[in-house]
Image 1 (tube, rainbow, N blue to C red):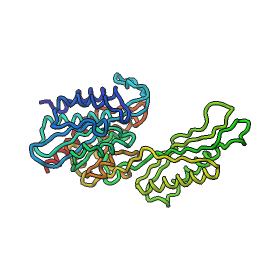
Image 2 (image 1 turned 30 degrees about the vertical axis):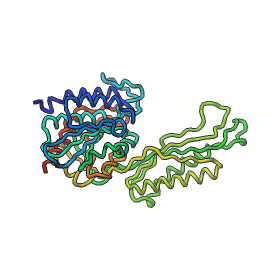
Image 3 (image 1 turned 90 degrees about the horizontal axis):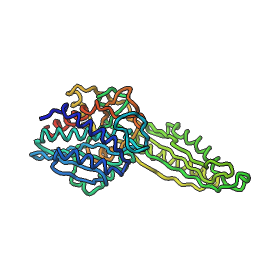
Image 4 (image 1 turned 180 degrees about the vertical axis):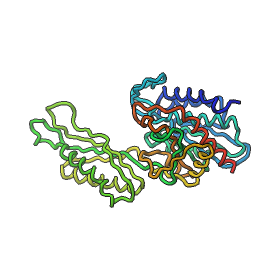
Amino acid sequence: MKSLTELLPELVTLRKELHHNPELSGQEQKTARLILEFFSRVRPDHIIEKIGKTGIAFIFEGKKPGKTLLFRADMDALPIEEDIEIPYISDRKSLSHKCGHDGHMAILSGLALMVSIHPLRCGRVILLFQPSEETGKGALSVLHDPKFSHIKPDYVFALHNLPGYPRNAIIIRSGTFAIASEGIQIRLKGHASHAAYPDQGISPLPAVMELLEKLQKLTHLRHRFKDFVQLSITYTKIGRFGFGTIPGTAEIGLTIRAVETDDLEHLRTEIDKLTDRIATRHYLEKEFRRHEPFPCTVNHPGAVEAIRNVAVRHGFPVVELEEPLRWSEDFGHFTNLYEGAQFGLGAGENHSDLHTWYYDFPDEILETGIRLFYGLIQDLLND
């Protein structure tokens, strides 16, 4: 019987193969096939394919009834071009695993090996490979899938690798672990004109300039909000290369974030009202659209304590976050319904940042993630 240390080379190979074959949110068919091929040696008791469209759930049954633990890994890659010299570089231009989901899937696959080597005495373990985390749609698509009704977990857990923290450290926080966010698209429509006759058109440019200035000030009014809020302009579009036409439409994209859901809703309402006033004053039509909403990921204290206990037992460094992480995670949809928690796995204090072209998941932390997850199985299914 092989030990986990002896199995790690297989998991590194899987991770690199997944890295070489990235797929966008909702398109993870090949990723699912690669995972299914790997699991052919594991032989779970049940397999639920195409859950949430492209996801997979592997179910391991114990000899006796007991609690059900669900562990989630995300599957999707990002529309970011990879420009690093590695043998397993992405085979898709402008698409790569720059958030480490390839590593998360390898960790869950390693957990499957552990469960197959040491069969469960009681309870059930669900290993969920979830699609479309990056767009915020994947968790809901799984939870709303009728096939999920066969799972009904008692506990849910997930991890995310975190550059900027000591390698193999376990980063925890009770309450809000990652904050809520959503994208907003604002479109302003006037009337284009010849550049020689600007008075014959209605340019959205003055409104865009005013709106950009005033948007930045909204979050400075701290007395209006209960906790941290943030607004980031992500893009602006007006006109195109040329010198003969004054454009008639413009578009602004922004992301809003908040620790409290009420604050996020309040900030969104304020942005909508501000845009409406400015558009009306400049005789413009307005479109206001919401994209990729993410809830807060709120960790349950008991689940966090279980993670801490496993980390301490294995001698992994534990880092307690004083404030929530500013990025968002759709795992919050799971913790809104079930007791559980998400934790961070340190990727290295000087490791490349997530969502950058030079990021690559560090294989040195695979074993820590597997042992932490497996420790939760040992503790929660045998208590």
